[in-house]
Length: 85
Image: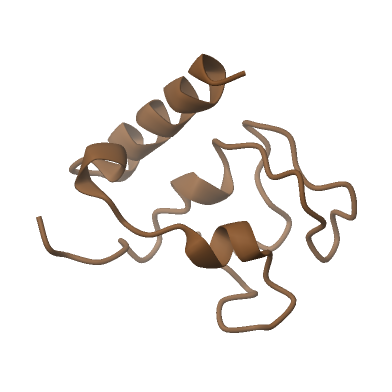
């Protein structure tokens, strides 16, 4: 699959934990918690901003992780988070 990130998905901003500081979340964010920078349309407010965490910048769409739809991405990312603790 050669498509890009699904606008409005936001699964990668909810399911995984992020240990680095995020503006508004100086201690990072726990798994399963919605990032404060994810807006009501499930878009990152920090996209293209230098304060966006490096881990977020480096995350790329991958069909094996993101699946066919948002619910599949949430399920896979949640499973990966739990499986790699």
